[in-house]
Image (cartoon, rainbow over all chains, first blue to last red; front, side, top):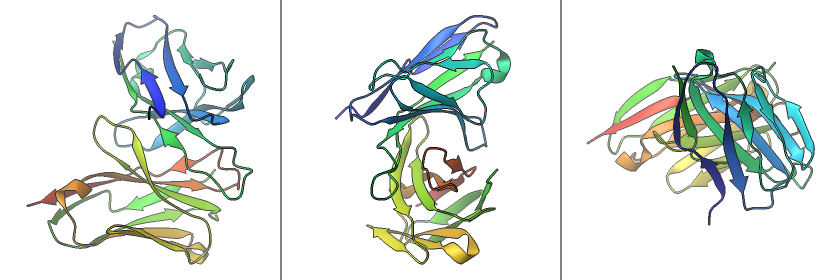
Length: 116
Length: 112
């Protein structure tokens, strides 16, 4: 069972470079999310999507872009990498919350990104 | 915005001992999620609580939700080295589950 798959696992970028963090889920979940986790801090929501073609900002969206062209994929784009974006990035997915009761989010293993 | 405070921030216990981790919300909780994280790995879902007074158990881990206090507790009985890791609580304050707020985590070490 693959679940939520994130690539790459590690990456070092130079300031000003761009890259895309990939996220794919095989559980047919409607909802997908991107978080960042800084040392000693909890997870902060960057962007989320409630379905293909629909995305919305979370708590810390500046410097990032997302797209959701399919149910399975939810890539996160960094256009001009800055040292402040050094973090561990987690992708998650869940069922539509409008079902009988809330549904837990399932997380990938994360991407460790360093910007030097 | 909602804030979640976890206590303690870190904990070292001897194998076999019991322990409790608390998660307190600044707003009413519609849903409270407990996750465990090991270094270099993602978050593993443990339990979800929705109703005031609700209590759930899985193996040696019990979680309770006290809705009136806007607080949840996670209790581990007879701790084992496999329980070591970071425990995070996540809260749904709007009844949507689409915007969870997470606490900063409690780092648990279990010594032999």
